[in-house]
Image 1 (cartoon, rainbow, N blue to C red):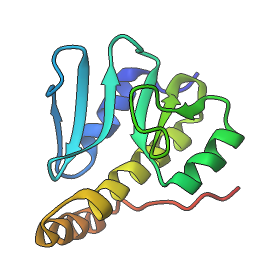
Image 2 (image 1 turned 180 degrees about the vertical axis):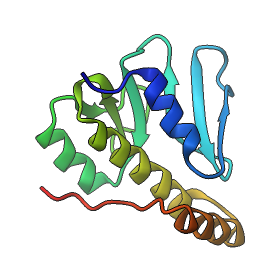
Image 3 (image 1 turned 180 degrees about the horizontal axis):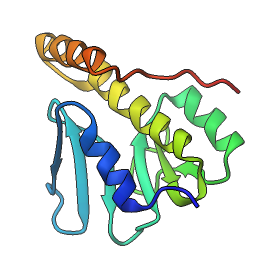
Image 4 (image 1 turned 135 degrees about the horizontal axis):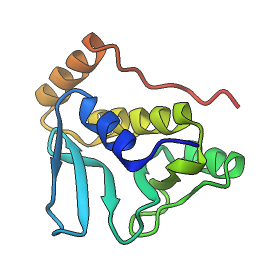
Length: 133
C-alpha cells in the first residue's frame, strides 16, 4: 500500500523551513513555507492531501492518475487532492515537493525571503521534478 498520513506528515515536516499550524481551527493541519500554505490535511477527508500545482501539470496528473483530483475546498485550477494511499510513494513525495517549490517561487514575499528559502532548499537537495509522462 501507499503512504499513510503519518508517512505523509513526516515527509511534509522534513522539508526545510516548514511550519505546521492550525489557522483554520482543529479540523485542519496546514503546512506553510515562508508564511504561505503549500499543503493541508482535513480530518473530515482523511484520505486526501490538497497540494498546490501548476495548472497545466494539474490537468496532466488528473488524466494520468484517478487518485489525483481537483481539490475540494480550494481553487481547483491551482490545487489537487492527492489520495495518497492509492498513489505510488514517489508520486506523492514528488507532488508535495512541486507544491512546496511552487509556493516558494510564486507566493513567498519579500523577494529576499524567497531567495533565502530557495538557497536553503537547494542546499538540502530538495528539487522539483518535471512530469515524465
